[in-house]
Length: 269
Length: 268
Image (cartoon, each protein chain N blue to C red):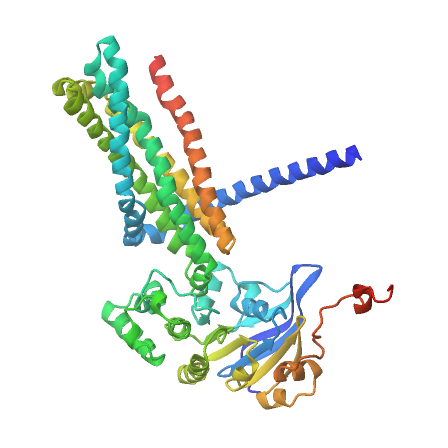
């Protein structure tokens, strides 16, 4: 992998409650210019890891270096300065429902720049054109489909040309067409903006078609990593079950329970 | 066994008290942070004006109609009593003082809490539940400065204006019933009112009351919205708590303010 990482997670642990650690000794590197997937089951700690990269949570042990700075050393102003160089796509878009599509995309520009109105207009139209929704500029978020809302949110997250774009479950609840559109946009925007992208997802097949490198997580640890081809051919039992959607395996079909016979009182009969 | 039971009850009581104290402390720190981060709301005043429109202008109908009816009922009830003492010309004074000192700020405050306070809590709570506030933080925009502060100042500035309009509508209602319907002399109605209502002792004190109620209601509304659990049930409970808590706060504050403002003045 290339050097010059934009995100460097070193032996990070995190726990909301000391008795139940969510992340255990996680280390990973996200090189500049790449699209990296963090995959795993729901509850494996991948969203928590994303929040550590955002600076929303601080590691209880270890260090998270993002855009050249350690998040533990940042004060409120430093954290906001770092976030101005990042974009984030939330699971369901998180568009401002009282603002039109145009105003949603213009929001970061208006908040962080003093650009004249005609320039804001042109920039917003450029971003909306990039996601194919220039014609929807005057619609309200309530008038958009799920896939369109996600694309508007994507346009908003790239409004300030971020160096690092974070995606939290970007494919959840999308139809196959929107799925393909979002996947293609993630790759295209990353390459055309010269940005770096981190995708947190459990939609493994679709994500494997977009990413350059994958970190696989289970129970708060990184259990496998590699290129999409390496992950597809992995013989690690959990990865194999997850990638191929197998019915039973390290993640059992049955929730732990006492003996079946005992529950049915067969033995005593 | 009884000692264990007593201990469990005491623990529950202690835990409830501690949790309430913690929440009051959190709400106070929230208010201080909010006031200190009001620069955006004041510098970009159009954000606050938009909130004055939502909290104030959109509450006008309920405020004016309620004020009119309260004034009309006051005139009917007041006339009934005053005419027994042949003092029906003082009807204007009774209506005006009741409204300006007491009913204007209090009833307008209660209506404001139900109409605007609940809307503010629901809006902020839903923004939190749909990750709009988190999205703002990720865009390096402080949601307290950008979303909460304009709503707070919009509410605080709207409240005295609404209370004034409530009183004005009430006095007009009193005039309609007292002068136009019952036939009290119009000259006596207005002139006695003008002579008896003092700008500082009555009107200014009424404005101060409404300003204090405005701060209390809007503070409770924005805090409940911001602190609401991000679920449908959480937002619903927070909205209910806003109406109940701010109504009780208005009544308690009214008693304290009335005791401070009017009891001392009359005693001299």
